[in-house]
Image (tube, rainbow, N blue to C red; front, side):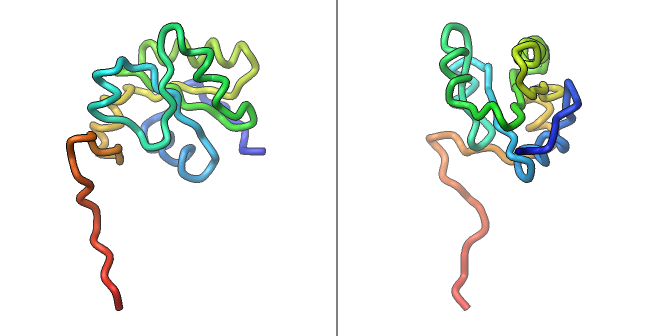
Length: 121
């Protein structure tokens, strides 16, 4: 089982650590337009009426990072998930905080990935 999540809100750097090394899952509450523009790799989209179906795709044994635009709505949803017995925390500052810290996101569908090039020895 993943480590126990004690925080209710995570700074972006700590959130990235949770995702990268502790099996954290991302639940993104933003609307379609924001989702297409930028998102955290591996995020599950869940908003409005489809929130419960999005939760079904998450592993209840691993912590959930809840993301919205600025951190307000995600704090409410993370609190609700904790009441349901899940390990959940909101991303402090939402996607604005994540991107403001220069953390990685998936490129838009209209962009190409410009990461490091692999060279053969």
